[in-house]
Image (cartoon, rainbow, N blue to C red; front, side, top):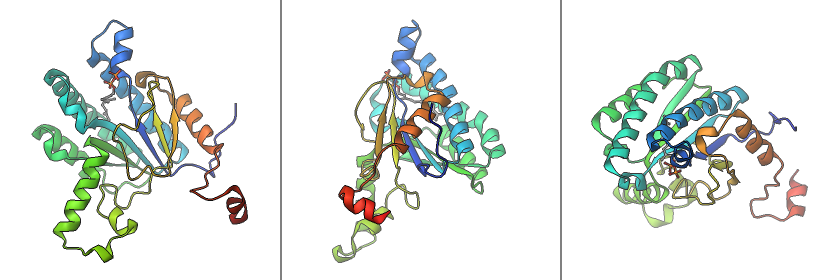
Length: 242
Ligand code: FPP
């Protein structure tokens, strides 16, 4: 098997972690069992990403649309989130990983907000890798929030360009993701980093999220490294630039 070229790593990887419910169903278990098992995959992915030198990892943990799931599932997911962030903070500190979040976190229950903010505060000086949890997040929410902030700051239209707009997105100062991974055999972006993924390479795998292991991440990165990224240019232009 090919090896990862550490000189050509994506700086930022985004992951749509999908398939927890289906994974649980195949085992005759409740959906929550799938989510709990998904936490193990989160741990392994974070660990591996930091080890190989990824600088930013964004995980789509809870979308704006997920609020409309059955109340009991939302409640369980929030509880799982609090306990996972609480128990993993020590590991984040030990491994020099900074925690950040993007999304409308005001909508989270008070205890979840407190746990999240406390871990963000404790890890704020870490600099090996930034783990970004997308919580109560959607790409359209991100874009609309940016527009609202721009209007609030009374910025005139002649000043608005892509660079300025990016300063108002939740991912301000975070490079756009070069690689976006989605598990569970679905081929959709589902309102993830809509603006930021304009030039991302997409990698889809049939693996259900709880089964996602280091070897799956490795495969995704090796696949990314085999792609020719032209950003709208021709092959000839790209070769000239090299
Ligand atoms: C998608 O599977 C998964 C989620 C909506 C939640 C992801 C949450 C975790 C992995 C646990 C907590 C995360 C962190 C960062 C500590 P699904 O329920 O849509 O599965 P299905 O498509 O098979 O129904």
